[in-house]
Image 1 (cartoon, rainbow, N blue to C red):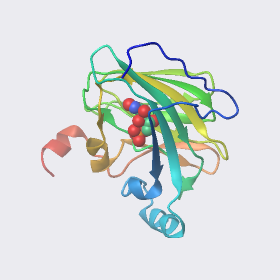
Image 2 (spheres, protein in one colour):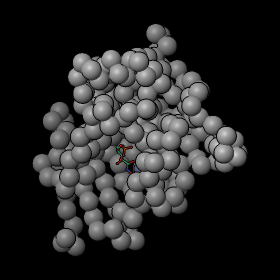
Image 3 (cartoon, protein in one colour):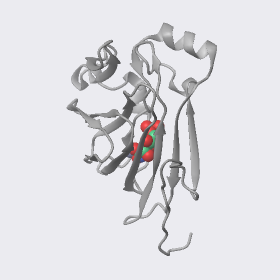
Image 4 (cartoon, rainbow, N blue to C red):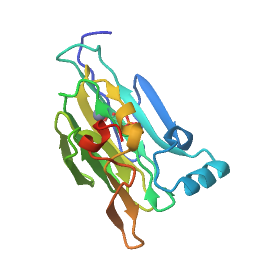
Length: 199
Ligand code: PAN
Ligand code: ZN
């Protein structure tokens, strides 16, 4: 990979960059066990394996000092009452942070630490969100019919740990109350001390 500066235009309304290193497509079938309403999940999936989100990555060598960046495009929709969301992850190198910049749409970032602290921050165009080291993160599209588009940057050495989130999901879920989004407890989630006692 050339160690020379590069510039990539992200222009409205197309958004999709003219150049990128990888394009990841995540469909509903890859989110087995992650949505609260399992019946709604099975039913939605039986109709169509919907495309939930796409990521365009600008990748750099996995070296200290390098930064990976890219665009996340999370489509609108729901499984039952739960809005479409990304899988979410901790960074494998837990002590690495990430910055998100919201370009379009409406949503939230759901975050938590391994110790069970949690936070939810709104994402609307112009918002810069700092996800500190140690915080797992998942974006959720709470808009009715618009993509949630964010630009992100993180250390190239970070890596993605999906497994710990897949075990029981995030502590908080974002559901449509019928009157807008609400934050609810995830019944599958167990506090670290309970989890580690092997219940
Ligand atoms: C982002 C995310 C992207 C997709 O690049 O990877 O939004 O979400 P999932 O990786 O959870 O499927 C990021 O946070 N990178 O570290
Ligand atoms: Zn990340």
